[in-house]
Length: 269
Length: 267
Image 1 (tube, chains in turn brown, blue):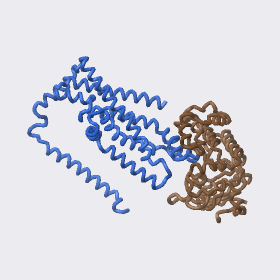
Image 2: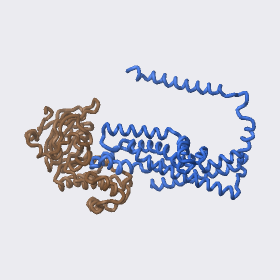
Image 3: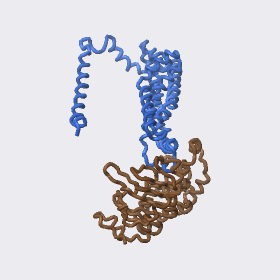
Image 4: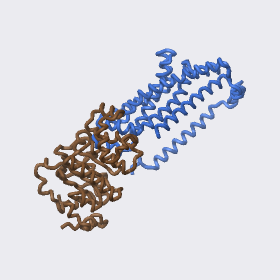
């Protein structure tokens, strides 16, 4: 693609796509007159941690939602874990491969914590089992073990709406842990957190990706967190790829230029 | 801008509608026979006697017992009617909300047909249903229960489908990306999110069902309204007041009960 200024993947892209857990080609999305994503190629191997950076409206969230199967791309092909996602509804088929955690956390406030965590199993459970579990929780032990790891085991039976923001974030991560998808997507997972908590949440998410042997793709802004927790950075502006570099090459000047309102050229060596 | 979408045109249409409605009202005044007086002969006395009969209402033990029995009949009809209405209305409302099945034309068509059926059920008043069912089953409780259940199921189904559709999408997306099917999204997302509202509205409708059950007397089914009608025919206004107080008490009781249930749900 002409937009590539630096693509470490271009050379390997035409090789058998099964090597990539995420393999999107020519993905694009237009909302009305707004081009959220210009045709974009994205390929991610197992073990990679990819940070998406860019100003608001650069298409980070749209890309994550396309990868999550929540919105269909206008064009392009998307293979997740070597399976084509064309025509797939979000649900059973996708949930083994891909899970999304959003800034808004997307928990059901009226349900107790245990049920919000068990929602991570809904892709594997049949309807009857799901219904029974709503009244008498199945796999309560594994929920308890997961919540213990996150330090909120004592909250298991509380209504989710009564938890603090930080606790709700752990519940959302616990749900993702029970779902155990190979591809973990996170939309602004740390944007409302203090540095210490942001560090811990990213540690939990990358730890989860490591356990499963999968990948993590997250949108965030803090360069120090990116260098510490991620292996690769993809920069976007107005839906167009600006750079795709190893995270250690992410210089402050690069980010400044990316977020610059006057859209100066980006100094990638 | 096309002519049909012009705001001027819709403004004109609204003015025209207002004029027609005002005109209809003025015309209706002319159809009243003012010369003979609005209140018919002896009606004035009745208007005066009725409020005075409240002091005191009929409080003889025999009549109070009759009032209690009539209240019980009314409550039984209302409870059975609203229960059946919820049992019918909830699944129909879920179908009409279009939240089950794969997104697409079939789902939209099924939902539209179901909304049409619900509209038909509630567009016929419970009294008309009562006339129909009395013709079919006689003056039985079954007729009263069905006459309440069917239009109320239509109303509940419509409101339930709207409530289920009006929940915030975020938590639903969360469930979808966790692998939940539309049915899973319904039972883990939509239902828990609107449960309190479903129950509140059910209770509100229960209150209406009590009044509806009382009115069933006008086609001859036993209950508070039946006794009210008998006492009215005999011009025993004190008895009418006693029975009205029973009805008032019933509505208050339901109101108190539903408030306490809703409070315990919300806490």
